[in-house]
Length: 179
Image (cartoon, one colour):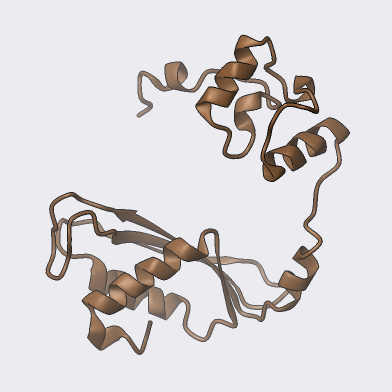
């Protein structure tokens, strides 16, 4: 079922709209739009942007993809099997389970896309807590099974996933060796 306010909150915008720039603050978007600038192509060179935003603007304007000079080196250290991993959490104000503090992140969902070798297709593994009981042990046990014998684990936000694993090790010290 689609939210009745979806169209209101997500108006149709052109693919080069200024609001799609990475980490673009609402105030900056509002300043640009108030000045009549709605397309990335219209942003003046002197408009203050972060380095990442400027690279995105340059890529859109030139039509050329930007590739980090460090990317090849980073990719060369990956070893198969490669697991691409992501976590989702809730962080309730009131601690829900033993050992928790207010606003601790409780991991309740993970997904892993695993590629055994270069020419292999990805296999998806996932976990979703479907009850109100403490999800931490089944979350951790199923995750450990999915990434078992991984050569490399790739995450979108290393700090976030590492912090969640540290939390699990603190809450479940008997599982620390697996983590």
